Length: 175
Image (cartoon, rainbow, N blue to C red; front, side, top):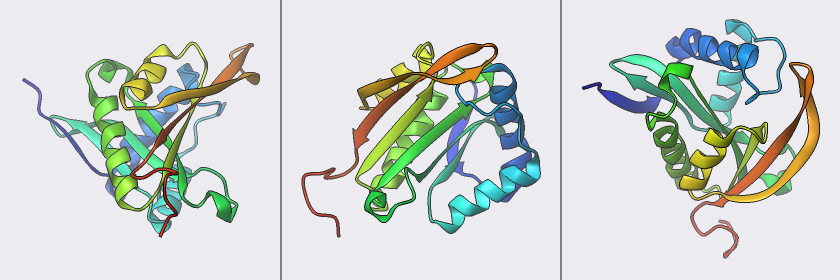
């Protein structure tokens, strides 16, 4: 039986994270980037999220990183400061093993503990039923679809928007 764990990502994880993301960029529609960023750029992105005190997680199986997840600002304007956007990426061989859901659930827990009130998922490609399903299982509601907003692999792609309240959500004034 495999031993899986979710933990905070570290700078030493950047090469594995870069590899996972490059696979998603080259072969998938979960991200609309067209060229995979190099490890230096991935480190810069990681450090920016860490400096902003956003959670960045690694999912491991038998000590090997097979996925990662992070939250970041939803939008830069101050009124959005209590809302985060999530991202979850897995190696293809790790799909449908519960790792994505475990990463997302831990991300939800950590964001709620940091005082965030809403989490937004911007899911690339309305055909990405696995990601839509994982988000639904984690308590996200469908809030809309932006049809034909991305063009990748010679076709138009939608983005699916899902949202989940964190903690008290919008029921109380944030502190």
